[in-house]
Length: 468
Image (tube, rainbow, N blue to C red; front, side, top):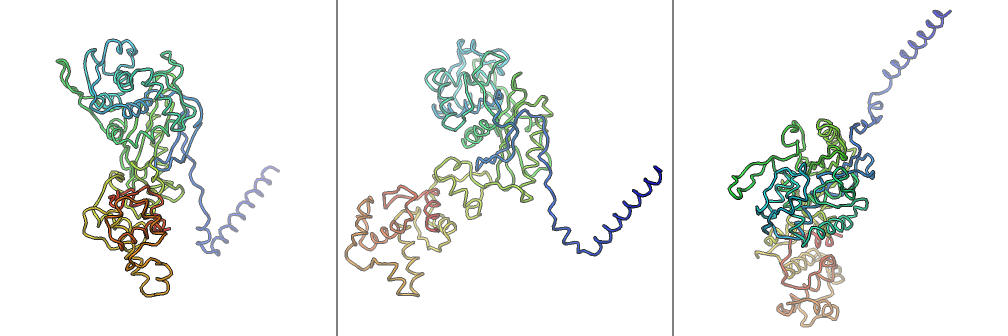
């Protein structure tokens, strides 16, 4: 009886397979090809918590327990670096004292700096971020913000300013409950935010990208080389990838486990931050981050994930969203190092070309070295009137100001009365300046000087309004 039932089941299965084969032979293959294949699942990794974040937009792409309380270990030193940079000059000298030595547990002192030695803020930052040296972190905390206690207050204030609502600091090195510091804790999401801010500082960005650093000679001790604790620069170098690791910071304590916030950048300038907390071995830590970055960039290349193009030095400026929008569209080309230099002033040809690319206009540029507001006003006015020449009625409707008139209209007077140096131009030129302001193009910038030289950032903001 069992054999009979088994034969019937096999017979039914064969029939089903034959029917399926017959149907697939009749139906065009293109229909089957149109059925979408499911995306592979986000890789399973060993981390207690992680966040993969688009560095330019701040959007979370993938996450695991991202708001769970965790211990950040030495990744805290990213905040220490930010607060030090905001409160002291890079060349400021700070002496490492016996008092500071007593504040630091022996297992946290990586370089064993001698009391009485003096280094600059720049040198301490290199030693702290590359070798993860607690001596340097403590020196920065005591020497850049008045007092050590004030520095810790500033760390917490900065976290609040960044929206890191689940974060607390009570030391600058990342020591936690294992050393009796019970008020240093965070979440994976909060520290992804921190890394995003840190990587917008050129000094931090440059330091964390280094493989090594030569510590200067002091008090008879020769210079010596330190290596970056980031294993992606040594033991775990990535091979055959279309992205590279460009920072940020490692950490290890008993409570935290192995920790790394890694920042990656692909060939198109898309940056990802992977804040990974709680690896139980180095292999699990680095392999887990590699898996997540591989997956994220593959999903992007396959059109399954959207990333925002942008420049790291405009990330937190008021103009950041506008500049990122035009970087994403390709009207502002990405640079090799991802830097836009928003405050740079370029020559007229470059700046007018930038404005034309963003706005879609075709203004002609003069031969001046820099583009002033007045120069732009004349180019814009001439372009608009050139476009309108074929239709005199439209020109008269749009251009109510006659450049040959000897007087400004009441509307033009109202505008120009708030602009400095406008009186140094003739009536026709004043009308052109007024025309630019009345167009609404200057609404996004607070410029009240006709001779003001436009920066790259201002040019993009103005051009974006001209395109509206």
